[in-house]
Length: 89
Image (tube, rainbow, N blue to C red; front, side):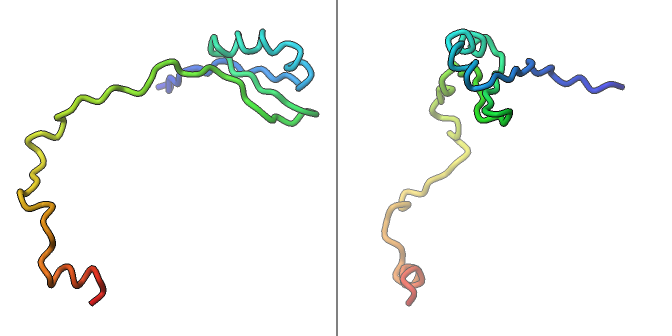
């Protein structure tokens, strides 16, 4: 049985001079999902790729309702013997 992995979009490498002169075109290609590698003297230095336009997922309040219990005295001072342990006494 063959593993089916999602195919990555091909990445293309440009030297720094080519990237500088054609930056607008490269940005358009990256926005379409292509990964562009920018190299200097054959050494990859930077990656240009698309930016996700989706924001963080909005949270819906109440997800833990009924699963968590907070005692009425939760924010009351600790008993003196326990407080002493926190203070190293």
